[in-house]
Image (tube, rainbow, N blue to C red):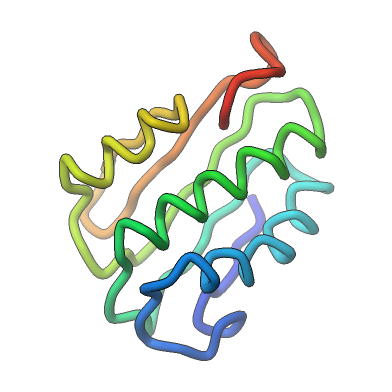
Length: 120
C-alpha cells in the first residue's frame, strides 16, 4: 500500500472545493500505476466537504480504470469527520462501497475486474 499525505500535496487545512480534489488526482494517478491499494492520510486536515469527496471519488474512478484491471482499494486515514450517510451516498453514486472500519478511517472499494465500464 502506498500512503500519500494530503496536506503535503495541498498545503491546506480545509478541502472544500472540487478543484482541491482535482489537484490530488495526479498523485493518485501516479501511485495507482504501481499498486492497487492507496492510503490518503488526512493528518493536519481540519475539514473535507461532500463536494470535495465527490470529485475525489469520481477522479479516482477514471484513474483506476486507466491504470489496471485489478481490484482497487482506497483508504482515507485520519479523516477529520465521521463517514456520514451523506458521504456514503456519494460512494454509492459512484458505485463504490464506502465504510468506516475504524474511527478516523474510511475505506472505498470497487471491483473493476468484473465490470471495467463501471465506476470505481
